[in-house]
Length: 110
Length: 115
Image (cartoon, rainbow over all chains, first blue to last red; front, side, top):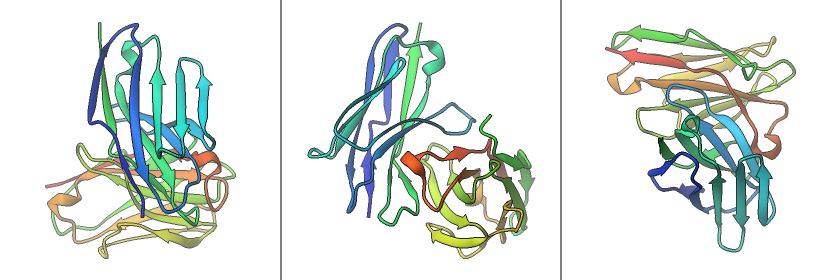
């Protein structure tokens, strides 16, 4: 099966940089994704890493190390609107379903 | 706006009742996924349909069932409702059987409250 671990909560101030970590255990690996979810809102796709290294999309970057079964989401120049929950996710063997981590709640303060 | 629609937005009902949640996927998407998200919980995969056929099952209770119709919209039926079924129910869609780059498009969700 698959399991993913994330910190439950991270706090930061506006303009800062924050890193949200994700460690995973999976029998087959088909890439690590990140989703953002604001309170009461729908999850939205942020990024996907299939290979080791850093993928950058604007203020957000995502990193993967397959040998360490580890990834992180890096948020730069934090804004108040970045306050949300962030979930990492992996695809299960058979490409049937996404397995989500427990989520990290990011609180950005002024 | 992801292009995935869900109705109703809110639903309040009593224990023991039955409800139906509806989802229309993005235009062109053949797969529909259902998720349950309880308070302070992550997203729990319930079931997937691809082009009308059930493709994958997750932690779905026997009291719950789903189907996907020829026009590709999907319904999730929840019966003999219990207080613990109160949650946000999300529908997501993707183009193929699986998801490209693990990207699924989520609807706005239906908030179910069982009293």
